[in-house]
Length: 111
Image (tube, rainbow, N blue to C red):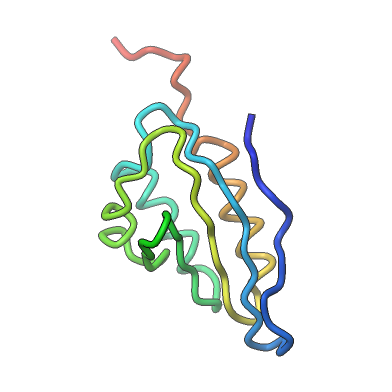
């Protein structure tokens, strides 16, 4: 199960509106290199600035190295913030990555 909220707007200026969405890292290995790479690639598709927040720590969503510094283990709640003209769409796409566990299927053990 994933606890997330619908995107919410934090600014009155629509062109620079900051929207946010809570996501939960649900894949067993956490936000390691492969999902961080997928997340950064997805974030770079959008014009908006994308940041992930873990408590007081912020990471540039378009930088795999920044994302890895979050050290987000399974169960970690993060807030994804997007600021820009396509913020809503970016949040939906990034939220979908978390919901799909970054396409990792832990129930298929590797030999």
